[in-house]
Amino acid sequence: MTQKRVLSGIQPTSDSFHLGNYLGALKQWVELQDGNDAFYCIVDLHALTGEIEPALFRKRTLASAAQLIALGISPEKSTLFVQSHVAEHNQLGWIMECIAGFGEASRMTQFKDKSAKGGADSARVGLFTYPMLQAADILLYQAHFVPVGEDQRQHIELTRDLATRFNSRFGETFRLPEGYILKAGAKIYDLQEPTSKMSKSSGSVAGVLEIMDTPEANTKKIKSAATDAGREVKFDEKEKPGISNLLTIHSSLSGQSISELENEFEGKGYGDFKGAVAEVVVEYLRPIRAKALELLEDEKYLTELLHQGADKARVVASATLSDAYKNLGLVK
Ligand code: AMP
Ligand code: TRP
Image 1: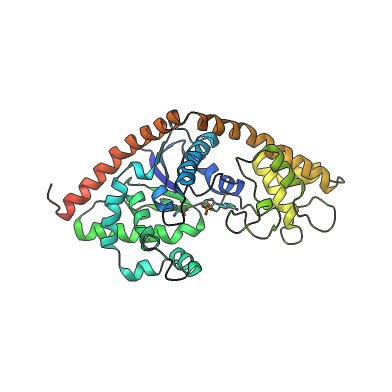
Image 2: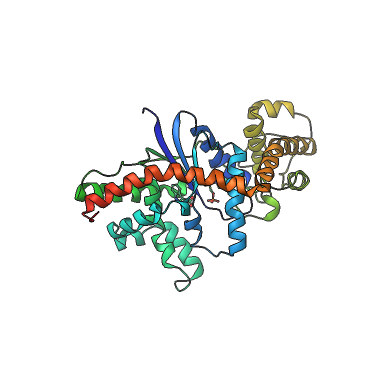
């Protein structure tokens, strides 16, 4: 097969993905389905490293799946599955932990940042071993490419190091994956603080446009977005971060170029422009939200789709795991 294998994962940690997740990452997942053999994993086991509340956690895993499908991840074109449905992830995860050095794991910046936030005593061991489970996610599928944000670069490097070490000590087992850093995607900023990125954890509630929000709520957020001095609709990230962010959002969803938009709104005020942005966002998200809500109405069908995805994933994952076991000398 000449198709490239693509694998990525996302944590089910919120009720709704936001527009930054979509334009920065998930839109490219959708594009990568064509011409590639794509595996997309809802990494629920990784989410256990944070605070969880069981009923909410369950709901968020299903909501994440429904939104991914509604956004265009097709269960026919790609393999969409839940990590905990494929036990091989934990099994290879342990092998990766036995290959990784304590020192190199200690150097992971995501671990250092997250453990520093809560204090050493509240950091869990799972947060420390998180990157080795992520390496297993990737290596099980012999992925060529791993589309992720810049913040994941170090985890991809570690995955390559672990694969290289395993292959040279125990024989060729894993393909070395390449990061496919999604920097071409638009970076979307908080509507209220347009110099910090749109984010559930650090941003303001009013500054985050959620896929699952009602059209009224999103319209209100856009209409009350922070704007800048002056009244010209011009792209200028330094002097006009608010207007520039709204231009990026409009352009990414409508397909109109920034300069077309600047011309269209020449001589008109911010109010008209925000109205137009709100309409574009709301109309873009309307069918997506409706589709996700429809999928969530029929939980049986949704979980059936995920089980089918897991069955396809397991075929590939179990073949890789049994190679790894054999090469390690585990008795069959
Ligand atoms: P998170 O779980 O919030 O780190 O986001 C999941 C994915 O969405 C990551 O791969 C990020 O690259 C992407 N992402 C998150 N926030 C934004 C943003 N404001 N603009 C662009 N991409 C984003
Ligand atoms: N750590 C990734 C993040 O926080 C999520 C993830 C888990 C992942 N396993 C993966 C991403 C495998 C790519 C491939 O965004």
